[in-house]
Length: 124
Length: 172
Image (cartoon, rainbow over all chains, first blue to last red; front, top):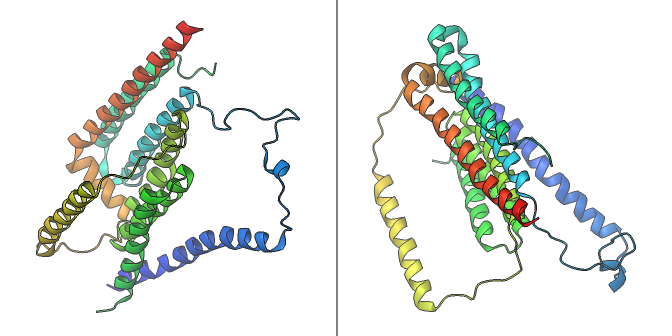
């Protein structure tokens, strides 16, 4: 039970850091707003486009390639998450877990090879 | 009983619920994503309170990191003109309210007297190792099924996205 209390108290430090992380940008932006001069004019609010008059919406539709890259990142991220507890408990698990993990990694390598063949990894 | 754990849980749950409500009510998509990140991080906090350290780390890594990014990409892929739906009729609002109320009632009665058998509570000791031992000895089949699921997700998304690409190629 003592260990549990120790565990929970350790997370107080994490909590303090989390609060600092949230407070720091808020305070910085707020102070910036207090300190900077505020003289708006219409020309200042237009988008800077290398001296050309801005036209069209600033938000454009992105290429679908970005999405596939993000998705592959998520999938291999999940794979890494599964590798981690295996690596930590490796000494207690033995050879069978190694075979399991080989199958797991092999499955995802099939996916990677498929993506490669489909020329998803090529940028333009 | 006002123990520290209770106060921590209340704070975290409050942040999670506020994040969810802001997600629904904000109008800027980027602000919505920030609200969603707050919800994800506070859910990680709840995992920490439950002594599930590894799951909490994964929650932050995968959800607050990766899933948020993929949602942002998904938003950027779509064309979003600033149009907002007209608010529904009051009759519809009432029906939605009834639905929410019913769901809350069912959940309350389902959870309130739920009796989970008390397990020996040593999760905070070598949490990751415990997960590893359980996952790779007891739960091998679900684990391998997960790899198949990931493979299906990867190949399926590539097939869907590449089909769009070829269409674009035809146009050019």
